Each structure stands twice: as C-alpha cells, then as structure tokens.
Amino acid sequence: MNLVKQQGPLLSKLFTISKIAEIVNGKIDGNPDLAIQGVCDLKNSRADHLSYIASDKYEKYFHQSKANSIVVPNDFSIDRGDKTLIHVENPAVSIIDVIHLFYPQASPVDHVHSSAIISNTTQIGENVHIAPHVVIEENVTISDGVQIGAGAFIGSNTIIKKGSVIYPNVSIYHDVTIGNHCIIDSGSVIGADGFGLVKDNNIHHKMPHIGEVILEDSVWIGSNCCVDRGTLSNTIIGEGSKLDNLIHIAHNVQIGKNCIIAGQVGIAGSSILEDNVTLAGQVGIVGHLIIGKGSTVAAKSAVFQSLDPESFVSGIPARYHKDRVRQDVVVNQLPDILNRIRKLEKELPISEEN
Image (cartoon, rainbow, N blue to C red; front, side, top):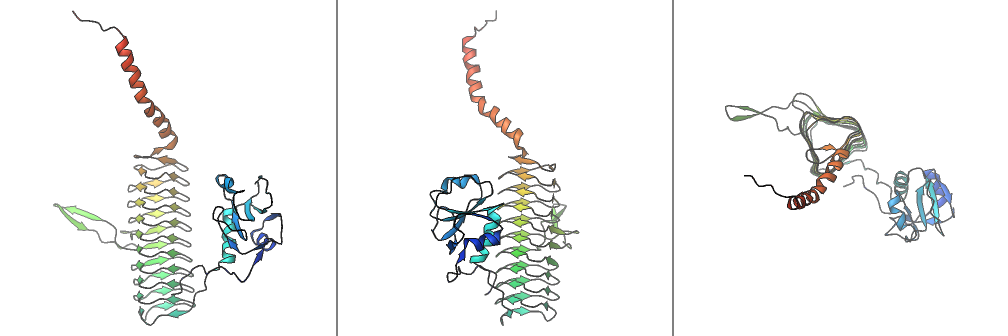
C-alpha cells in the first residue's frame, strides 16, 4: 500500500546549516558549514542532528542536549556555547519544513488493486492509489492524487477532492463531500445517521437523515471518530479544523474554520462551533449551543450554555475559568473557616434559657 507516509531519513545526503537556514528563512549564529544528518528532540539527541526549542519550558535542556545545532526563537538569549543556532520567528513551524527535508513524503503511485470493487460509474482522476479490498459504490468522484487504504468503503454520490488520504478501514457513507487535502485516519465513520428519535406512545421512531456531511479543505479526522450526517440540513467541518481520535460529532453540527478538538470529545446535535475554537480532551457540548469564535474549553468540562467569543471556561458545569478559580480559593478555605467557627463556639459563653 502506498498511502502518504514519511520515508526513512536520507542518510546518503547531508544538509548544511546554511541550506537549512535558507529553507526556514532563519539567521545563523555559529558555523554555517556544519553538516546535519537528521532531526531529533532536545533530550534524545545526537550531535549530527538538528533540534529545536519551541517554548521557554524547554530551555532547561539546552546545555544538556547533545545536539550541536538548534532552531530557536528570534528572542532566544541563552549563551550558545559551542552550539550553532538558527534564529526564526516560530521554531515549531520551521522544524516541520526541516522534517520534510530529511524525511520526504512518499509519492503516490497511480494504481488500483485488482481486489477493489469499484462501480463502473465511478470517476477516478490521475495518480490515484486504491488499495486491496476497497469498495466504491456508484457515482463516486475521486479527484487527482487521492489515496484510499485497504478495506475502506466509499458510499454512493460521494466526492473526494484532490490530494486527500483515506486510511484503511474507513467507512464513508453516501452523499459525503471530502475537501482537498483532507486526512481521515483508520476506523473512522463519516456520514452515518445521527441519533435522532421521535417518541410516540412510548415507542421510539428513528428519524430519517437526508442531510449530508461536508468536510472542507485540509480537515484532519483522527482514528475511530464518528461524524454523523445531518437530519435535514448538513453536518459541516470547516476548513483547516483538526480532530483527534475517538471524537463524536452529532447530526447537524457545524464546526468553523481552524478549530482544534482533542480526544474523546462529544458534541451533541445542532451545536455550532465558530472559527478557532479549542476543545480539550473529554469535553462535552450539549445540543443547540453556539460556542463563540476563539473560545477555549478546558479538559473534562461540560458545556450547558452558549459561550461568548474568546471565552475560557472549565469544569462541570463549565463556568468562566477566572470565576471558577476564585470560587475554588474560597472552597479550599472552608475547612479552616469551619474550624475557626467551632473554636469560637467553644470559647463563647452559652446562655441558659429560663
């Protein structure tokens, strides 16, 4: 199978610090002719590898690191000693380019495996790789450069746009649109019916779901996620949003652009996440809420009401984090306050009623 993956390091080819600095638009402090053979982290480092410091909390490892060359922020001020530094605006972003330099992605091979079952109404672009035992139903459109892993299922009338990667054992139901350069990791299910029920005389009737799922460009869906189709409208995940593993997106949910959703999050039906929202692990969002642009919800929080833009909330029920911290301070003082009250009660004279 030839899904997108990092190849092994190009050990036969070294890159100098000057070449790397040119690629990341960095400023060199040290030896520009130093030869680099790979990339490593600060703690598990090698002298001939390049490392990086993304934040202040890693500076304590600087002098301990065996790496002779390190990518650092522009304002980095620690004495470099005998190390060579490349100063850049954002080391974490720059190191991505360096990783691609040493560990290039394997190019897709235009190949359809003989065991794949593909409808004759399917439209397949150029440089498409379809692995063994893939099933593709009627009227599917697969654009250039798409890669589909072994055992994946693609339902009818689905569109998969350029450069997207569908990993093994993904199930994409009918009438789903996958944007350009999306990634869907193994085990995820896109487009199943949502949990819509109508109760009548103590009988639960399943609501038909005739909406669709739309993943806009550059969306990443982690492993074992469920993105349900809309009931009458569509479920939408906006451009650039990234979902971790084990996430449930219920019917009619709309997720804005560049949202980050960590593992084990559940978002109930018809809720809206505006752009640039961050949900930490195990967050729960009840249905029909609006989470305002740029908001952050701390881990293990349960959100029961809509949030204004740029909110930072935590806890169960989720409250504004600053208010919760103040309340926690008071709560932590309660045992001491109770002890003082009991002491005062013992010291005060007790009046006797006649």
